[in-house]
Image (cartoon, rainbow, N blue to C red; front, side):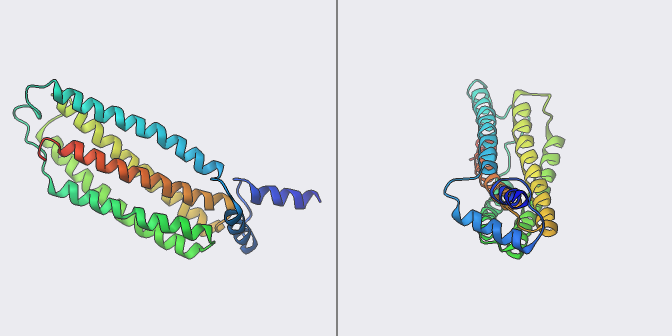
Length: 218
């Protein structure tokens, strides 16, 4: 009785379950019966609320400094180019689709589909981050964050979003490793869903960040 009860508690909570086909089937069954979002999903949602507030503050600061400036960007600093940031952001936005499909596949216990979809999204996200790092370094050669208020908020805003993209990729790597080695237990099924939610919010934030970044040019 004790062992059976412990097993039921493992499959009905967010704790890791043993690696087995039975655990994967049980996790999918729990997900199908669940009528509310699991605690892990809500934990990610609360974290993302704080991050949205952070970016709202940064974007508000950017435009506050813009309204109070005689020239924005200041003399000697070129307005940002439009094409590459917009193309990169558009590509990043497309990754919300495979992440949504991965969350759906996880709820149905389709481990191979989850691995393939998350891996595909991660490749595009990695390419986006590499492009943004190159553009960031190029901008650093043209002007410095210490030189002007524009440079300070410009680089802070971009660096904050790039850090969130990197964090998302690290989350995906952790989820992929655990799903590949332990299977879609209840714990990692929720992990897939929470990671998908993370990327949906980060991708929406990318739109606001790039529009803010390019506002002097648009």
